[in-house]
Amino acid sequence: MRHYHSYDELIRNNARWAVEKTRKDHKYFEMLSEYQAPPFLYIGCSDSRVPIDTLTQTEPGELFIHRNIANQVILTDINLLSAVEYAIEVLQVRHIVVCGHYECGGIAGAYHNNLRGLKENWTSRIKDLSRIHREELDSLPDEKARLDRLTELNVVDQVQNLFKISEIERLIEAGLQGGYYPRLHGWVLDLRSGLIKDLELPLQHWKANGVVPSNYQEY
Ligand code: CO
Image (cartoon, rainbow, N blue to C red; front, side, top):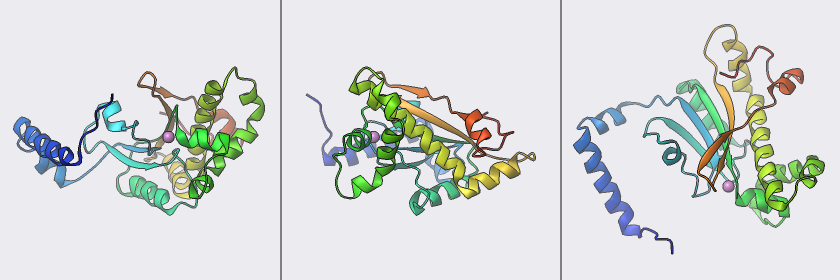
């Protein structure tokens, strides 16, 4: 059976961790508290099994993080939009990653239409996606494959939404003249192996549709 830490243990573990960090590097917290300049903005699912810093072996100060149910990029979500604005204007992150994960409750709930209340509103785009891609999803061998594919389609859709955020559009347009602009990526974490899949984005299609400037470079 799985062991969960007790509430008290969280605080004790933290104290032990801080002592250990200081023992290894006595300036660790002095440096950490001075400033942040993370190269990455990470937008992921709230799911407890996707702690991206653990999964990528990154340290405090490397990832600026925004999480919500099923990693949605909703263009009227002031929480997400202000995090993105801060990340690109103040921190000037080099990369923005949207990361979904297989076995996502938000994806399955939207697909089966059994989420109620605000959770249903929140995931309504995923329901749309499962309708839009019905033919492709139905052609897959089983439900697991359909949910996995819907997870990927959702990530790609959310990256496309990122490109539509006016601040990002403006930055890319200006950056293409020779300045800074962030690169956008879509990932899926496979909880069954612990491995991240870097999804191929339909950039040619997006460029043809005018969602992405034609000279945008992925890296
Ligand atoms: Co999830």
